[in-house]
Length: 327
Image: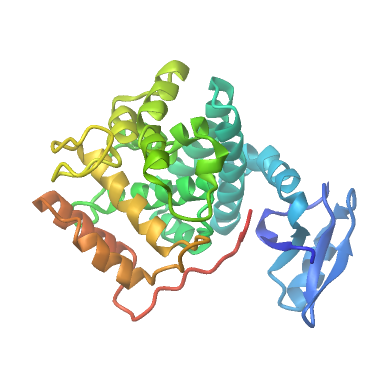
């Protein structure tokens, strides 16, 4: 059975050729809409909008080609002040997926520069329009693929930094940017792991866990070699699995840097609400209850309280629509 992935219309470029076939969903079936190399026009957009269609579909095998299509336009979109926030949000997520996917395959300086070019303009937009950051939550994807997980953690951790201290923005653009590279690249060391471990559908054996626990050190080494190891990224890459009670890895440290604790909370939350082959996704409120068990210090308590308030978890459920599922 052929697999199709939904694509938000906001990332389609008016007047540009598509690089893959586009489909629309009609009565439960995926119907051809625009073929490869067809030009997506304002008339196409108006026609879809008239019927309340907000997304098109692509074949699963075309995901990488489509990500590159979005990424090629991302710098222009993210730096253009006239483009609506919703377009920037969708573009950022798909473009960051593309850049991180490539970095996981080839973690070199050129790949990290692509990530920088995606993150930096998005941060500038967030600093100006705080609502945009909250809206990014709505397009996070939770199939727990390593690179989409990294983007989600980057978004959650960035939001945590900006929402600390009663919502006052205590982080400057420079400080936030230095931290963000660590948040978005916290799992880059996993690119050194055998795929048999990284993609294992079930729980890891003790021998496999020995290998898994090395990825923070590998990530630190990669960031150092490529020149992307800011002080904040160094702590984040090495300590995001450490715990103040000494139960974490790789060193069993008890004195954890605040940036690493922020990353740890975002990391745990996204892992819990994500679907994996061997477990169902947890409800956000239940995930928060698990996070509360991670409270060891006053700073940890502040993080959980801020995170709960930031996500608006006053309702029984928090909507997390899957806009870019499987991308």
